[in-house]
Length: 357
Image (tube, rainbow, N blue to C red; front, side, top):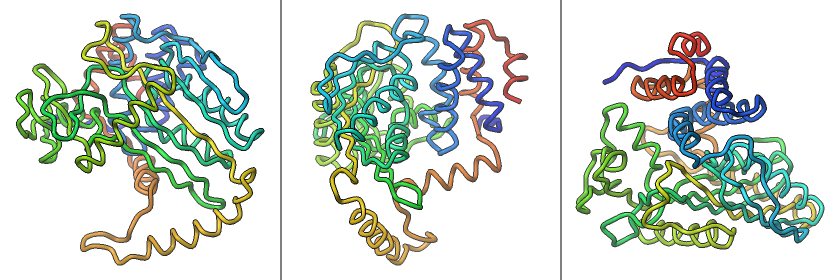
């Protein structure tokens, strides 16, 4: 197995911040991007972490990603917002979009936000957490404009992206409930991580370019490509379809197409519903019933080999504590790709190693 590097979070943020800033971003933007990516690694979602940096730099240099952009308001209907991400860094665009939605939901009790044309929004749970921190429930449907990589149930080739779905529910006095998953069995980035580590993926996760089952992650990374499969057979496929239509079309963006314009980019559109339980008059009931049900839910006797039944968001919090204590593992291939990205913007390997600690 390739060598694994271990990094502490703060020096790693500094290294990624330097790369993004060297690509033309302001210090604020570079900091937001770096912190967001490393946070994904801390929570165990390496697929949405610093391994995205080489893709961002390629996209930036080819025009698929535009530095220092801010969200644009296309339509302001009070509790209804249609926004344009203008191909800007998703870590900035997502933050600004949710800030607008939060303010409107607190004012009106609810806000529906259609966000189109943002570059890669990263871990969608991050935006749900931004909402729950302000006491809001949020629901997010997301589509992905890049080369299609997921096959519909019953199909033999890719027709759409990993199309995430996410819900955040604030929990007074405790960590929020955050359900965040790709509608594919695993995120595409996880197959990239497996490929870089020289590991197979789980059976019944992907198909090759001929539509046959395989465990070789190369079929989602290099040509000829196959496809990821959806979770839950027709159920996941149906939810992916809904994410495509709501997250893409209803939000004001486009739906998946056979090919994009040739630029290396990952564009996301996101349809979000933000609700203030206090304005709805059910905040106290939500809090009481949530504690009652979560206790009942988690008290189910665990299967052999498990300590206890976990609730949504708990595995990420446990992984973060572990990685803050022991460091963030980055495989040698991924780190080599990041070194290559840094060199493209004028940062040499020695300087990058110094920054990363």
